[in-house]
Image (tube, rainbow, N blue to C red):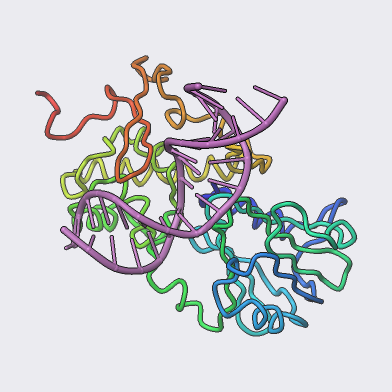
Amino acid sequence: MPELPEVETIRCNLMRADEDKPSIIGQVIESVRVYWEKTIQEPDASSFAQTLAGMTIKAVQRRGKFLQFDLDEGHMLIHLRMSGDLYLVPKATCLDPGTHDRLIIHFSNGWSLVFNDTRKFGRAWYVQDLQKVFGKLGTEPLDETLTDVQFFTMLQSYKRQIKPLLMDQHFLAGIGNIYADEALFLAQVHPNEISNNITQTQAQALLSAIRSVLEEGIQRNGASIDWVYRGGEFQNYFNVYQRTGEPCKVCGTAIEKKFVGQRGTHYCPNCQVLTKNKGA
DNA sequence: CATCAACCCTGAGAGC
DNA sequence: TGCTCTCAGGGTTGAT
């Protein structure tokens, strides 16, 4: 499922021009086809299609797990959720939609942007005001202006289990299940740890771990898991995610899986210990 | 404020 | 072989 690194990888792929395909930047939208109405969150599907026609893609940015396409006027936003993927293909190959194609945008240069989304959870918006969708989003974890002390203060302001907090997009924007598990392991923090019990030293380690796993994910072009292949290979470097029963790469203890905040959570019961149990 | 269940969906994998 | 059943998983919403 696309998290920050996968979304960033897709963004880079769309922007980059190479022998195989042009950049999406500068392309003029010729027509918009919606094959699953619910994919369009705002406005309604036909208004969305009509409004976008004739506009030029000026830039593609990322905010959390959202892709932001800047147009002549306003922005198209796309959230891939669980199973979404976005890619450019020659228009001739997608005049008839593929099995899970939900939205296809045809450009005047003969190329098309395909939004393919098996589970139909993905969403697209057209908005003038970014705040309408981004308003409550939290800090970008890779934003260099976020300091260790600020992060520690943010943790202190909640009394929540750390893993669900990390995944809360109002807290930090972009972290999902995989990178939360991997970051907590690297920082040696237990997923059930209560945020305001985390020490300043742990907070520093955690922020550093979050940035480390996100950057490694981006560097490896994201993780390709389940049946949705995106070309990334970070899945081959997981320390805990989907390694239930396998030995911890640090201490050899079997990795355990349990549910934390309704999410499957993988951790090392030896390396990641609750503060209150330390030294007990 | 924190937690939790339900919902949206599909296909993989298990059980038969 | 092929049917039925269960369930993951991000985010939103509504209840406790």
